[in-house]
Amino acid sequence: MRSYRYRLFPNRTQETVLISTLETCRRLYNNALVERRDAWKDELRCVIYREQQDALPGNKDEYQQQVHSQVLQDVLRRLRKAFDAFFRRVRNGETPGYPRFKGKGRYDSLTYPQSGFSLSPDERRLTLSKIGSIRIELHRPLEGRVKTCTIKRDVDQWYVVFSCEVEVEARSHGGTAVGVDVGLEKFATLSDGTVIENPRFLRESERKIKKRQRRVSRRNKGSNRRKKAKKELARAHRKVRNQRTDFAHKLSRQLADNYSTITFEKLNILNMVQNHHLAKSIVDASWNTLIQYTTYKAEEAGGKVVLVDPKNTSQMCSRCGMLVKKDLSVRVHSCWNCGLAIDRDLNAALNILNRSGWGPPDAPVELETASNREAPLVVEG
Image (cartoon, rainbow, N blue to C red; front, top):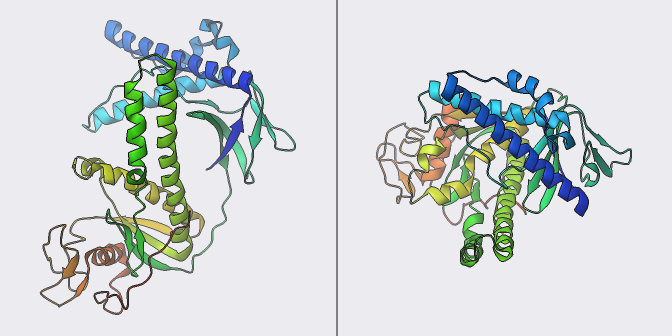
């Protein structure tokens, strides 16, 4: 399955219909949640998806009659997924997190799971049932068999996401294996000595975001000026989000094309962000996004991604295996047993590669100096 995301350009009338459709879906979601909650609270009875789906045609109000039937059914499927995840967390002993009601403006997408949508022959218009024909910009070819069509609202912009079933030919990769140590001072260090600098997109835009956040706080609640200020704030956050996504896509493409086996640490990000001194920087780095993108791109390129245990990758010597304890402030790994002295991130990357089963490097890697340091890998924006 592969997703293709394109920009939509609805006119004012179509945008009004889209917003109304989202609001109808939001109310249906909340009403279905109330039904499930009250049935268990009053009768100790579980309401399942099939029961709510069968009752949907006879309970449509005047607003739901203006929405495609399969879009409404998908809303109930989303609620089912929310409860499935809730029960899974309960079984695993995690914090359950009961499904929440969707507040106004918090429901931002609708899905045509099978039908109700079509592209024009020239691929310039997307026709949606009960909404109309909307101009679309296909900036890249749409491949495979389209399975679902999702319309998304992103602040003041609209997008369509086609989920397609694509046949990928099996092929072999001629590249080498590499270990990747992600961090905060440097975004990533590869076991071959390549360094990727941390772009720090949130930190770079933090001053602008704080300024717009203060502007929202000064506006009166419910006023048009506050709505305008909130939209400006959301645009600033969207820019940071798009920068992160673009960076992760470009870097993952380079990794997938140049290396046959890419090894990362299996990090528990939820536990790491409990450190309030580093939480913002960890979230800004978006390591999981890079791993996710690299995984599917490596599979398509004939390679693979391996996740290994992160325990002591920075403390263990990559040459002799001895533990050399050091604080985060110590940036050089200096082994008292074998004399190896290299950058601590490079040492960690070598340990990560070793744990993937590819073994230690053929030649020892010495401490890099200004004369032999390789140029950082640059991801062009």
